[in-house]
Image (cartoon, rainbow, N blue to C red; front, side, top):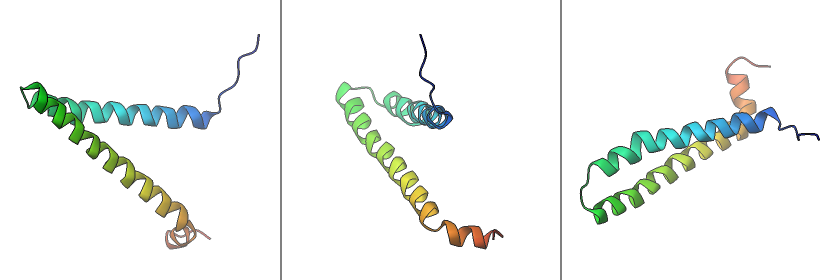
Length: 81
């Protein structure tokens, strides 16, 4: 029986995604939920925290797209050929 080999990139991106989700939960969601006492306040704060997560993801994607798009200029700027 053979096991399918998973490419290294999948492990790296999966690990980075997992670390990012854990950081979001520990640094943003847990303090948010601990700050409120009523259930409806906790629900509203959790919902608004999802907007923070979406903003972080969109900023990361935008920076990634900018790096890929402007890579020739960036590599020339930083001394590449």
